Length: 95
Image (cartoon, rainbow, N blue to C red; front, side, top):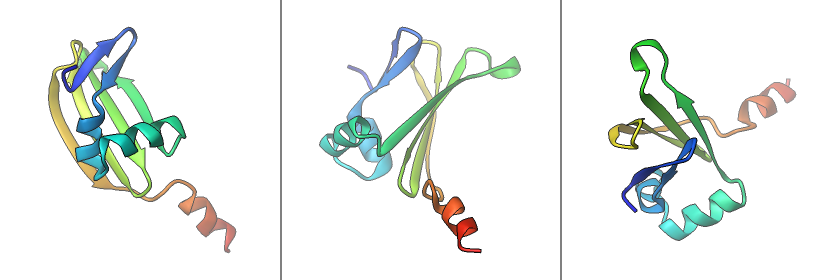
């Protein structure tokens, strides 16, 4: 498999590509995808972004985003820190 392939209505992303972006091993990516510790979102581009897709993956305090075309060709990628899920809720509950 190439790094990202079209898979019906969605995309299949190689675990090695995700591992590099999230600082994990491919085996950890597969395990954490199965148990829900890595979550993902696939969004279709609109207007001037039509034909492009944004694939975003979250794991703990890290996220990575891949922008691909309709065939899965990688156009851009980025990794960045995020607030872990539940952190904002927990902070609000402490008030």
